Image (cartoon, rainbow, N blue to C red; front, top):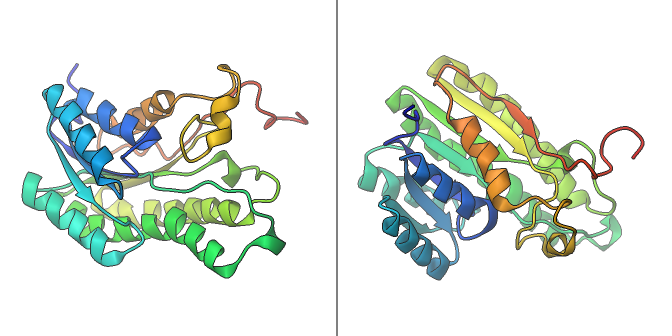
Length: 243
């Protein structure tokens, strides 16, 4: 069965590693073309080579997703290369644990900017392209912390609760233009942004590929369907009940 993603164009932020890299590879396996955004150019270049070796098409655009000029350039480059954008994965983010009394304003602004403002900026610049194309899909990568926070991480928690609110607002605003906006909440995933998770047992931390598989599935839907929210939680994670 042919995927709706075949020949579509997906922009993936935070694409240089972890869930973002796994998403890029997953989209290519579905026949999509990918635009890779991150700050680490050498990582992006390597990923483009890997994708081209798979027979896929990819464009790397070095991007600071907290800078609106850089984000505008990202989408301009995507349209210049592929003609349009059909899917946006707002995956760029940082994870941290800092108690409120130790959190500087600069640190707060960095976390909010990277985890929340970047999703707003990318959505803002994708929106006119989606409207022109008659459809679009955005998946924001949230966190289980938007449901039940961890101790001593107010900045991260606020950013992910905010991202959930942004998702809800954009999902409502996109309906008339056939733009589906959704959010994926991963539990613990063994990625570079959360180094401690890689030390957990294999059956406790999910792999980036497992997380990306859910995101790809959320995108591999007819345009009239919005897979609005997904939550991935490990069976052993103390999230449900009194754990």
